Length: 124
Image (cartoon, rainbow, N blue to C red; front, side):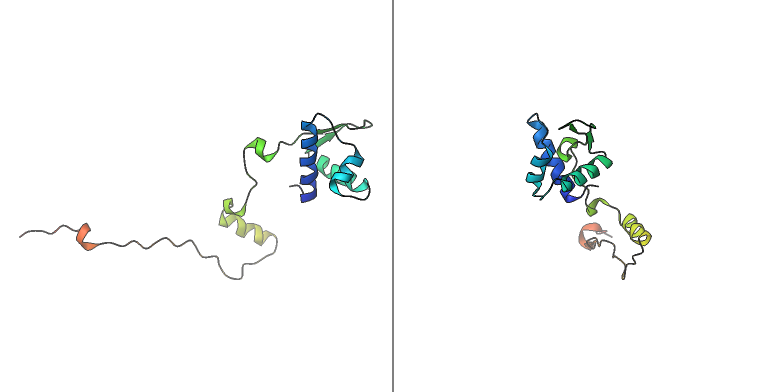
């Protein structure tokens, strides 16, 4: 999972790669709003460690974006709506959190039976 700043830099790199060139450290520094290129270096190191980019050593502007963007993959970022409740509870327990009150199960609408439509009158 990427941090917000790493994701921002990765999108900037994708946009620059679409133009056919890789930006310099100074250009990335300016685009990200850093005061020096050390912040860019740390972000690139994190992206490389997570497998999002590849860098060629001792070559200027040699950054290759490896990870596909979410729109290229065709799936949206995961949200908690897609995680089963049991998995959430297990993860919270693993991390040492306890639910103070149980999460209620979803309530379905009550089923109403109308006697006049469900039962037929019997003629004696």
